[in-house]
Image 1 (cartoon, rainbow, N blue to C red):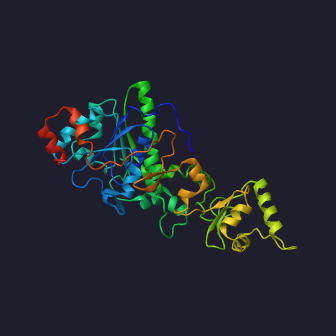
Image 2 (image 1 turned 30 degrees about the horizontal axis):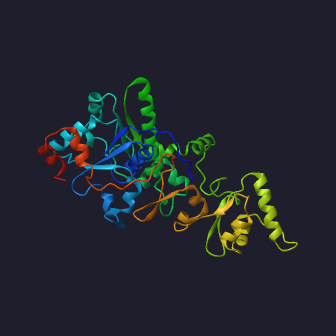
Image 3 (image 1 turned 90 degrees about the horizontal axis):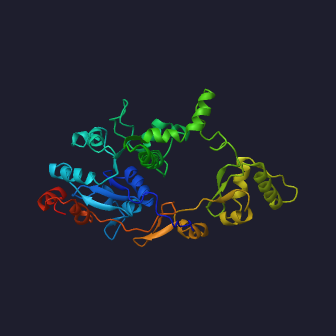
Amino acid sequence: MIKPQTTPPPLLGVRVLDLSRLLPGPYCTWTLAALGAEVIRIEPPTGGDYTRELPPVIDGHGVFFAAINRGKRSVTLDLRREEGREVFRALLKTADVLVEGFKPGVMAEIGLDPVRLRADHPRLIVCSISGYGQTGPLALEPGHDLNYQGYAGIIAAAGGEGTPWPVQVADLAGGAQSAALAIVAALLGRLSHGEGAWLDCSMTDGSMALLAPHLATALAESRDLNPGGELLTGGYSAYRSYPCADGGWLTVAPLEPKFMARLVGVLSALAEEGAELDTSEEGFRRLFLTRPRDEWVTLLQGCCVGPALGAQELPTHPQHVARGTFEPVLGLPMVRAPFPWAQSAEVPRLGEGNVAILGALGLPASLLHAATGGL
């Protein structure tokens, strides 16, 4: 399994306030929580994060919400009311990091302008995650993951047509993980110079960075990216996925000559006597349709060939079992954060931290009641 660390988590003692909702911000702070940070979700009293009720729901928790909010706390504050903002400002004095995902300008509209917050709290790190960033002609344009991928060049690079990818690349890699890395870097920088930062994290910018080497090559050659026509995008018959006799799929990727030679050797030995091995895309397609997926995986060990596992296969695959990749949450196997400090944790109920966290601020009970919606 992932080797557990005996040293304390690197972000132990760091308090993060999370004003974000849906996917990018909560995934970012899930990463920070797995690294040891205390993450406090700041949610509206009327229902909280939208994904709390996104089906399927088990024991009152939306499974989607549970997957990326384990290990956090939750308090409710109505930031539309001055009482809510007053309590939030008091809570902010105890925080190291603030993560928000509002449209640019909204924080200022509700009296929480990041520039003012930074002036009042010089050591505070504010991370603003948005689709296009805080500046530029698209800053206020609404959008979602698919739009950001389009502006970043990813959709065109993938062929431009068809259903969206099953993984929200812009939300997760371009936004959440880029933001988490920026926050950790800002915390590290604060150790040396004592100053916080306002981090402007654009999901479009972060997504485009994923294409950096490919774009550099394409621009140097005055061409567009060639979906399906380059070495790693389908232009090479020995770097593709192929269907098998049982409906399963095989990932074939012997890029290096030694692995290709090994693959050709095994497949040639299986061919009828005198038959010449056809290593074209069509040749491989016909060949791999002659046996079930797992039989091919066994035959082609050591050739950079593997299965395309389905969701129901993942939790019980020997590799993932050995690594402890999944943990039980709400009676389901859920993916653990891929860090050696990540610990099993509960899913926070809406406002469960109101008494312990907000009560510790020493504010009048009447103010807390008005600020939290009475929860």
